[in-house]
Length: 427
Image 1 (cartoon, rainbow, N blue to C red):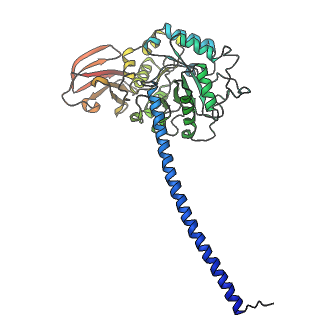
Image 2: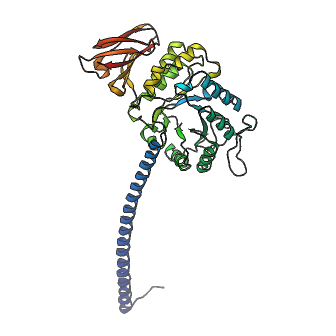
């Protein structure tokens, strides 16, 4: 059946539609105005929020600096490179004893850092981390008290994921505040915070909560980010922690060591007092490299203002290893108050020059032969930023001797993989 409309009913319908359309336009314009107003408000609020976040990060950064932590790179020992998971409280006590008896503590090595595998597989009923009963029966508070009585500091390990890298204990993701309070109650002074089992969440999201949680405890705890350089932490981590790994794990091999040095070098400009690039721990004394290679390892780490964390068994130090780790003049370069990371300034067929400024207008220089045969390595004044005509005294930090009135360049014949390290003092 066909539908029929009278003219009057059609006019009425049009009239009604017109009114409805008018109402709709009014509502729409109001909605647009309201939306625009909401958008402006959100934009204004977002801007204020960003400013507040920036101010909060800057305040947190000032707190990190003002608490006195990391004004120079940390020095100490870590259990992982030599012992891996084979650790217990007796080892930690004996290591603290040896740090003092060898004289290393007096040179500035102060942190005794426990790495992975110290805890039980599961948290307790209150959700707390629990030291492993079979290896740390006395608990961490008693161990910290022992280390503190030696004039040293105790470090511990956790992970910004669900489990640690060994998968033998829980990580701290989602438990940051609780774990930070636990560490503080034990008297912990240093936290190495790893990156395993991380649910593919960005480190930029996972690391700041632990940083804030540590700060909120009121206890100064050095915060060492170990996210392996995966998201270029040098560019953002200085507002989060006191050091950040720029590389994957080091191995006790020449190729591993030099690759870590090179990867770390590109971030030199980001380091400074309160926050340091970390190419991983020292392998000196573990037996995988020659004495000359270990000497280069220590020299480059010192110049690069890297953390000097011994990775061997210091209870059984041989004379050579002790001499390398105890070189006060090389340590002084690492601990220089100016806090500028030295870097590679010249490379030619594996013949390299590394250099960096020191306080009191001095300059640290390393001549390094990374080639497979003996060679002469030379640093001209233009290579290292000295003005032509500058005359210096050149202190050889490994031979403990001084060349007076050196000008234009400094050079040395070096065996394969060997280096010389100098401090130049302009006259």
